[in-house]
Amino acid sequence: MKLNRALVAVLALGAAAPASAETIKIAIGGSGCICYLPVVLAEQLGNFDKHGVDVELVDFKGGSAALKAVVGGSADVVSGYYEHTLSMAAKHQDMQAFVVQGKLPGIALVVAPKNNGEINSIADLDGKTVGVTAPGSSTDFFLKYMLSKQSLDPKAASVVGVGVGATSVAAVEQGQIDAVVTLDPAISQLQKLHPDLKMLVDTRKEEDTRKFFGADYIGAALYTRREWIDAHPKEVEAMAAAIVDTLHYIHETSPEEIASQMPANITGADKAIYAESLKSSLEMISTDGKVDPDGAKVVLEVMSFNSPEIKDAKVDLDRTYTNAFVEKAAN
Image (cartoon, rainbow, N blue to C red; front, side, top):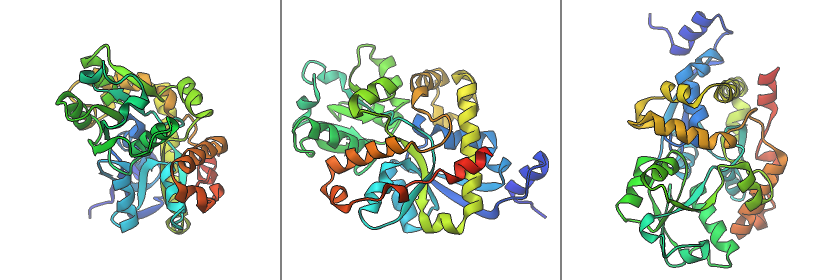
């Protein structure tokens, strides 16, 4: 008889019985992004199995596509940016984040080297073509917010979906776009290719994020429909515990060792660049998995600024996240 993968791990580790024999599908908004490292690394380390939950990771080009998979029913949980729970709340769809991967956005606005002399500020993006991970994704929201802050129409720049990692780097190198809103490892890859790379905004750092937004800004999280959480509390607690264990591992382990644990399709051929990307992005990775209420307020303020629909919806923040499962995992 063939045993379930999670059960094999539980027997081997002497852990508690599996939370469920059901395979939980987690839709990731771009597994190559450092922002989603905790969920990918959790699988590599066997942390989901350790906590008795069988997980399948399904990769998408951006957070908006991952969200559509859950809304459409082809996946159970999203590994995406917290802000999507707010945009869905404005549409009267209950989504809730239950463990945070990133306490900072980790997003940077990078000028394509061919435009170094032409683009020197966000205002210079007016009429330009800017790459984002996917239209409707967090990088797209971020761009529109930055344009709005410059008193420009949020649609002043043309948006093109370029994915994450190698595809976004290729879009810059091939001259397809004038600038890109992207994340690591793409940022570090571009910096290696172009030491004089111009970054107009860099929210991988706490200091820069607080300067730009006035506080920390919740980034990547695991979230899903509230009704699914209510129906699967043991599985949700197990996933939260697996992520928290992984967050601790990330902050206690060298970037080089972490890079060695990751598959080549995630790190690319040069694991040294991936390790360098992680070094540059460590500040953005949560240490405890909890949603900071102040950080949630900042995200709502940004989203409200950018979207009249969200501003007028009077979103109840308390319904968009819970720390209950992370707190249980800590006990």
